[in-house]
Amino acid sequence: MVNSLGSFQYSNERKLDEMRNTTSIKLDEMRNLNERKLNEMRNTVSEKLDKTLETRLQKSFETVSSQLERVNIGLGEMRTVAESVGSLNRVLAGTKSRGILGELQLGQIIEDMLPSQLYDKEVATVSGSSFRVEYAVKLPGADENQHVYLPIDSKFPLEDYHNLLDGYEAGDSARIEVSRKALYARIKSFARDVRTKYIMPPETTNFAVIFLPTEGLYAEIARDASFFDGLRRDGILITGPTTLSAMLNSLQVGFKTLQIQKGAADIEKVLGAVKKEFGLFETVLTKAHDKIKQAGDEIDTLIGTRTRAINRTLREVAMYDGYDGQRMLGFDENAED
Picture 1 (cartoon, rainbow, N blue to C red):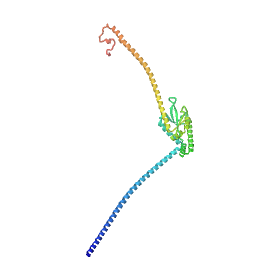
Picture 2: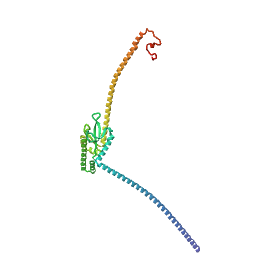
Picture 3: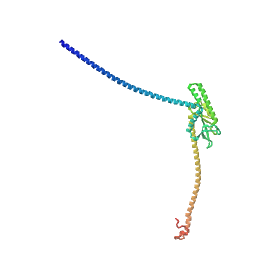
Picture 4: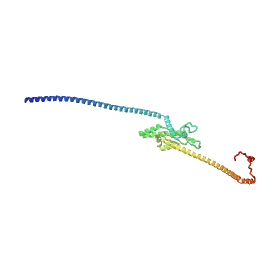
């Protein structure tokens, strides 16, 4: 009995050892497998993370590079604009350059609104004068083949206007008042110059036009009604781009109205001449009708009374039927009846 228990115990211990060894081996295999799987998973995750990170970094770098390129292009455009503004400022800094700019704008408006035969450029509006106005519109004169000039000159007092704008921006009322007075004084000087050089009725109209190239500058002059009307009473009309276009449009309508009136007068003259000629034609036609009627009456007389008288006289005469009857009377035998 004791031996059986010992054998059983020994057998159990051995089996337990075998199970323990087997379990240890299995656990080692599982541990190794798990470590291998973990390593594979770690490598896969690392590879995917690296790839994703690389892709995202590459896209980010491309986006940043594109934006930097756009910024660089924008800076280049800003540099170009700055250079252009600087060039424009240099151009506008000279009085002569500003005058040329104003003259170009004035010429563009006039050439767009009026046909070339209705205005002259760089013309002396006063006979014998050496002063030439930039543009002069031809208005109808007292005689049919004569015209009267309307002088139009451009002016651009940029410094005084800029000083006034700077005063507005700074909110400095004293500077605004000083700049406005200086601007009005400059416009008065321009008006006096234009009135002296280019106005001489009846060769010209009794007023001239000063063109200001910007609407803001014109609005600044027009805001003072008394100053504006004072210039108008002195024979100077101030205009901006819009008001000049409206004035030229009105002149063009007036020109067309005059053409229509002239055409109507010409038509009336032609109809009068036709009426006169038709009266003469009627007189001649009446005389011709009377003559034709008289000739018809004479023919009726010949056919009636004279023919009957001749027939009565020849009634007793025998008719000659010889072949030479026509020859005897001096008629051509071959003549047609």
